[in-house]
Every structure is written in structure tokens, then in C-alpha cells.
Image (cartoon, rainbow, N blue to C red; front, top):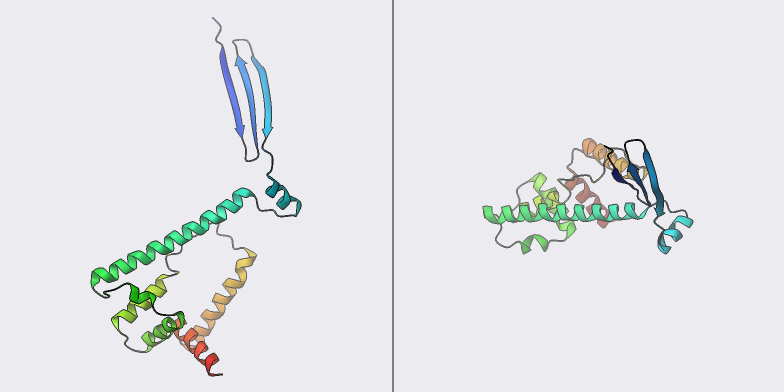
Length: 183
């Protein structure tokens, strides 16, 4: 008794699809048909490729998706913290936190390191600190790109200045801003 099987093999790539159709009998496999379909580049992709741009469509989508995830995480952290402030009775109106301009927040951060501030002002400071906290990388590797090295160097310089002067980051930025305005 001979067993006849038919197999369709697919190789799904990012820019092509390979396929083969095989009949298996008791004696031997028989390749009936095989082929490849190449997915052509769009006009925009071809222009980008010809100009030397190495970013693929998938990489562009991945970057945009990463930006959306980062924004979603930021908004969720902010909503949770404001909800906690309201629940604890620290603030009555969440709109108060958004009425302060950025330099006023830095002034409050500096003032909170040196003495007491009101509970609403403390909530504004905590919300400001929460802005970049809880960062979760979208990267699959821990390698640092060259474009990020300047940013890392700036952080190291801030850390050095904070240690030398004995200030918090809020105090350092506010004092630098106040000095620049005085000139």
C-alpha cells in the first residue's frame, strides 16, 4: 500500500515569499512546483533606498510604535498620580497642576529642597518628577547608539556638578536659570 502525501512549503520573508509543492509517495519525493514572489518596493521606498537611506519601512513603523508606547506610558503614569492626589485629598482640582509654567516648577523644586512648600506645590513637583520616571526601553538590546552618547555625557556632567555643589538637580537648574536672567 503506497501512501501519497502532498506538502505545500512556504518561506515567508520580509520582501519575498518562497513556496514549493511536493508530492510524497512510498518511493520518493517529487517536486511538482516551486517558486518565489518578490514584493516590490513602493516608489517612496525605492527613492529612499536610492538616496542611501538604510531605514526600512518596518524600522520606521517600529520607531513610530515605540513613540506611541512611550506617550501612552507617560499619560498612564500621570493619570495614576493625579488620581492618587485626588483620592488622598491633597488637591481638589487637577487643573491647578497644569497652570504652572515650567520655570515655576523648577523654582518650586529648588524651594522644596531648601524648606517647606504647600501641599499643592508639592503635588506639582511630584508630577514634574514623575514625567520621566518609570521609563521602559523599547529597545531589544542594551547597546548605546552614538547619537545617545552626547545625552549620556550631559547626564554625567550634571551628576558631577550636583556632587560638587551639593545641590539637587532642581536647585541646580533653577540657580542657573536665575543667574542667566540676572545677567
